[in-house]
Amino acid sequence: WDTVERGLIQRITALNLFLHDIYHDAQILRDKVVPFDLVYSSKHYRREMRGLDVPHGIYITVVGTDLIRLPDGQFAVLEDNLRVPSGASYMLANRAVMKRVFPGLFRNYGIRPLDFYGQALLTTMRYLAPPASGDPSIVLLSPGVFNSAYFEHTFLARQMGIPLVEGRDLIVHDARVFMRTTSGLRPVNVIYRRIDDDFIDPLVFRKDSMLGVPGLFSAYRKGNVTLANAAGTGVADDKAIYAYVPAIIRYYLGEDAILPNIDTFLCSDSVQCSYVLDNLDSLVVKAVGESGGYGMLVGPHSTAEQREEFRRQIQANPRNFIAQPTINLSRAPCFLEGQVEARHVDLRPYILYGERVTIVPGGLTRVALRRGSLVVNSSQGGGSKDTWVLHE
Image 1 (cartoon, rainbow, N blue to C red):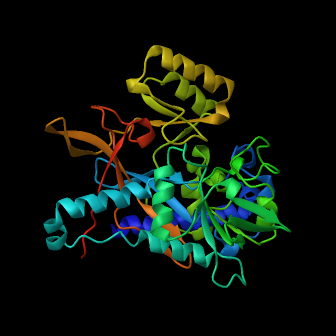
Image 2 (image 1 turned 120 degrees about the horizontal axis):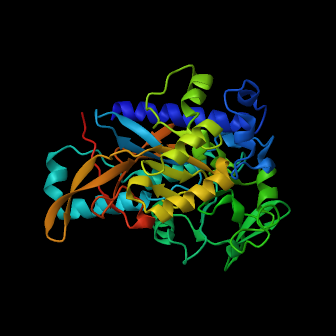
């Protein structure tokens, strides 16, 4: 676990420096470490963020990095989730259930706690408040009850002791954000937003958004309110940029990556794209800007029709796809339908970047519940497990 922690701290530090750089001098692009066109063609690159200095230079406040264990026992990074990572509530709920059902295990085995997460998240948000905020007012901005992660939004707001709001609960006056309350308008200093960039402000991004707050981005640019995570962070978890993360770490930190990447083929490169198209039946193909298991083809488990559909999509827009070898994920025992069976798993540790980097010991083990499946995402029918890290 010590190696995992060091690797995650290294990775989040380098990716944060990368985000600051590409929205300011773009020196890493000038030095041709990462291609210009790969960054500027990313659908998550936000020109509106250029030149904007975020509090303490921290763009990615909450991170969920997906890890897999390779056959030799080494952990590797499968994906970075830097926009609106979800699942922390399931991590906390799993632990609460396990402690209630098996209290003796927690008394006898020295399992490191993780129930501090809510307060650590609150402390991190306080640190990011604009100067002169005093005792900052913090809210969690949710798309609302119909969002698939609404349980998590209510759970975390309760854990942090902060209001859960929707866009209609907030209003901007004179480039400052206020929350509507029964006793009048209350200033808001920090917004832990669980809404994608496209929807946060209809005056700047999607004009048809009914989820955001008109004028919010203007208040943000003027430094009157903090958004966590910052807008535009998604360019750093673009799956095409992922292939360059080891080089990004070397560029900014002068170190080799502690946690390796999975081999990745960029369809934007004609030679690599030809290889992908010739081997669709053995590769995992992913759309670069998608998450939650969407926009993905698992070649060995796909039909000829599905492969042809992806072939057409790749040929129409190569930049939008990457491919990786099909990794035989490690497995864990699960009790299903009255018997114990092995299922494929990965691990998502949660990282908070504030005055210091806090990594929750363990995180969320995600489980592919269907026999033989490699898709662990909860949005695709996956489950989860409590994950233990023991005291030394």
